[in-house]
Every structure is written in structure tokens, then in C-alpha cells.
Length: 588
Image 1: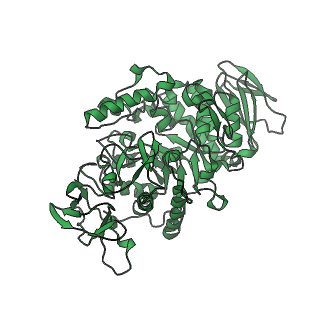
Image 2 (image 1 turned 120 degrees about the horizontal axis):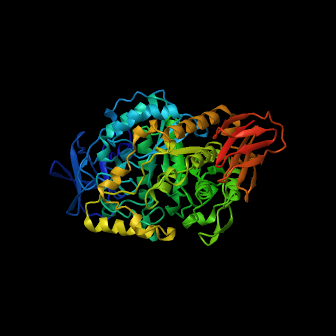
Image 3 (image 1 turned 135 degrees about the vertical axis):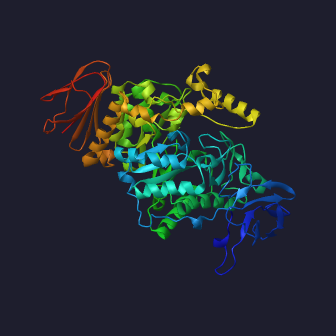
């Protein structure tokens, strides 16, 4: 419901409003009773007839409709159904004294509500919090939960951005999940999409100029962040962000694909967003964070507003993932063409970006900007995430592409990097289940368009068309659900034990958790696939080759003690360390 109380002066009665600047007549329909709304000079239509909690309503525009409220907080019948009034004040929170830990000390765990558990609901997700706490997770990051078309999907085609997806549970069950997380000491982040809306249920163009043809995204027209009437469009998305943080008590937001947010305004949308989130932070007395997904390699996104940046707290480090993935798997297709050597990985861990003003083979142009002066805590590093798994033809995880020994190396490089580590659900035990791309659109033409688009998406990767599961097949969704029972079976049990040890070591040794990228020292032999990473008093020795090798440790004062090794046959004598194939050792 678009409650305009905050827009009005104190002591004025609350109003329900909708922005429709080009409409000549707007009616509010409550239980099939039509009520005429009054216009103001700013394109808003208002009424004091506010639906009761749990009461359905919709709008008629110039005799057309009914349409759901663009700011609907509850869509129990899906994106095309009527809106239902949700009174946010009804829920009783128990997290009054909650304060999340700093992002610099965090371990983020990305999960998809629909596949994280068999039930695929907010309630069921709460039953697995013990596992996350035992692992050492501090921040849970939910993939988008805003109302989208169908019963299941990734959530990046949301259409009712203010309403939690109906198939995941009642909106208050989302609040219960977050409240429970806070009681258990877990912060909760939400993935939000502000660069486009889904193709089904997107009624925003009916109400006003929310989109522009001046720019194009892979999903169609871009959001109108800088054209005529864009001030109200910007307000819509910023109010959405503030709603999740204020009314649902999320501790931060991850903003999807900010490179597809086009804005030439003097104050960029992201800068305005970060400013208003900081203002909300001061009101709530609770730390809030903003994380960007960006492939621009532009540090201005995370530089402070005082130094000309947008002021976001951190961003996903695509270069780190790509360098790590290409090195371990040997894949060079698509955007992996810019990576694959130890040198690429070395550049990232010591300079934050690999491509920071150099020529990109994949893009065929100069790409990126230097960011070596920034703390590694401004970047999120991972071995896999929903994109890098789900955007493969068969949804293969690294556990499908690498051996157990290689997985241990990948985990070690993530958790000893200067970046904030992030896991994708099931990664910690080498889950055997894939994470596929799945949708449940009811429109046959749209379903076929999704299938064809999925095939075109993989043209640059040369993956066989027959390996691409049908996104619309219910079995594609079911196959992506985690199998929690396999955690107790080898090699999954062995992988989980390694992750716990690596995470514990990062917590124990300050040299492994600081963000001083510029102090990371790297020595390597590209031809022999040998790598040494030095962080303060800790040495990480890697044999990336598929054969046993002897590695000579650097001439620096050490106790000559192995803290942790991935292989029991690893042997140290003086400065020489005998390393089995695909192994890693931590020494001081």
C-alpha cells in the first residue's frame, strides 16, 4: 500500500496514494467498490479511504484495469492478482538490541529460499540456521524475494518489488525468519534488482514513465533514472530499499548488476541511495550496508562520497572469481578469456583487480580503473555464486568440475584472500546437486522465448545445446534443491571439515583476515604451477600441478611449522616442502 503519511504534515490524516501523472481519472477498488481518488499537482492521486489489514484492493486508470498497487506489500495471488493491505506495525519484533557485526569481519552465505530446503519457504530456512552458525557464517544473503511470475524462479524478474514472493510464505514469515536470525546472531542481507522488472506482472508503464528507450539493457528498456519525471521513479526504488531495511529489518542490500543502471544525473542514483540509507541508519541506530554487483571494475562505486564516489560499502569482485575459476578449471570460454594464469590471480589479490586499465581480450577494449589503494574489505570474494553456477548450461558447481583436492585449494585461496569471503549454498560440503536456471511462466510464448534466450546466452561458451535443461520443466527446479543428508557422507563430509578448518584459521590469525591487499606478497612459477602467498607471518604454499613437486620456501624468518595441510603426505624439511599433487599448506 502506498501510505503517504510520511509525505504529509504532522496531524494530517493518513492517505493512500498512487503516482499516475498522465492519468485523467484514477479509482481505488476495495472489495469491488470503486472510490474516486483526487489528484494533486505532482502527479499523485490520493484518498483517505485506506483498506483494512488483509483487505484486497486495486486501481482503475481511465477506466482500464484493475491493476495491483505498484507499491503493494502483499500479492497473495501473484503478480497479476489484487493487492492486499499489510499493516507493518502488527508484527512484534524481538531484536531491539540487535546490532550486526562489521562487514570487514563477515562471512557471507548466499542462499535461494526456494532450493535451500526441500520445502522452499521462509519458515523452513530457519530450521537450517544451526548449520550456518557451526560453519562460522555471520551474514545470510537472500537471493531476491520480491514477487515474481509463477511459483518458482530465481527472483531476478520481480514485478511487485515491495511484496515478498507468495510461494515462500506470508510476509510476516519473512519477518520471523529475519527476527530469528538476529536472535541467533546472524545478520541478513537481501538481493534487490533495480535495473529492470520482469516481463510478467510489470504494470509500472501503465502508471507512469518508469522506463526509457534512451538506454537498453539485456532485459529491455532501462529504468528512467535521469529523464523527465525521473525524480518520482528514483523515489520509487529508493523507497523500496528503505522499506526492506526499515520494515523487514534487513541489515543490508546487495544491488544486482549496477552496470545496467544508467544515470547521467549530477547525483547518481547509487549515490542518492547510499546517502539516504546512511540517514536511515542514523535514525534506526543500526548499521546498514550496501553491496554492489558490477562488472565495470570502477572503484568509484565503493569510494566515499567525499572523494567523488558513490559511497557503497563493498562490491562483488568478479575478477577474483574469474581468475580463480579459470586457473583451477582451465576454462577459457567467454569472459574467462581474460584469465587463466597464476599471474592474473596474483594481480587480483595484491591490486584488487586484475584488469585495472588494461586491454580486455573478451571486451576488445581497455577495461577497468586502478583500485590498489582500497582495502580488500571493499570487495567480496568467492569461488562460486548463483550466477557463476546457474549461468552454466548444466548448472555445474565447482564440485562437479574439480577434484576434492582442487576444491580444498579453491577454498584456501578464498578464505586467505584480503577480500570478504562468500559461500554459495551447499558449496561448503561440495553439494552434488546442480543449481540450474528455472522459471514457471504460465504464458506459452514467454516460456518458449525463455528457452530460446537461454540457448543464445551460451553461444560464446560453446556448450552443447542438448546440455541445457528446460527452465520451464518442474524437474529443473526440483533438481536444484539441496540434499542435506549427503553432508554426512564422504567426500562431502571431508570437504565440510576442510571448510570449517579454513574458516577457523582465518578467524584465529589476524594476518589472514585483514584487508591489506597492497601488503600481500606473491611468488609463483607459472610453468611449474607453484604458488606462494605471504600474508604477514603466514605462508600459504600451493602445488597447483597434477604431479608431486618440491617447493622451496622464501628466505624469511619462520618457525618452520605447518599449521594446516590439505594432504597427510605433505612433508617439510628445512626450507623444502614436498607437496603432493593439488595440495596446499599453511606455515608460520
